[in-house]
Image (cartoon, rainbow, N blue to C red; front, side, top):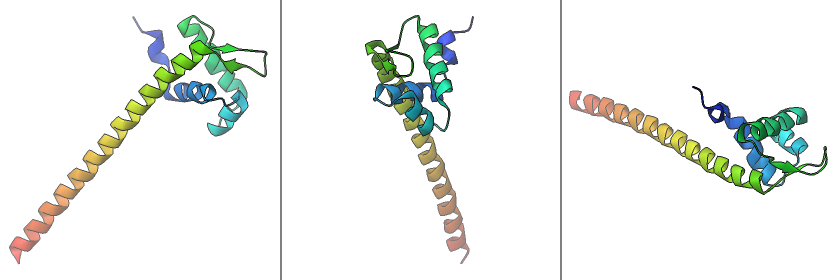
Length: 112
């Protein structure tokens, strides 16, 4: 059985985080190189998955409510963890490249 919450994408997490930081749906769409209806669909999708309202206010002027802010904080922590994993992986690649370069230099020095 698939976990419906596992279907949340990184871009959807970013959208909620930006909304929780006070950006409008239009601003978030611009920042994410998307469009406002897509951001509205993201909010609706997450509301459906979590079974709660994440926004408040009138259509066109909706803001994230307390439940949305709490969810955004969890998403931001997850995004930060993912970024840390990415940075760590990049560092490992660079260290591996340096080890290879040092080994090659050592072989060249030994052959002289």
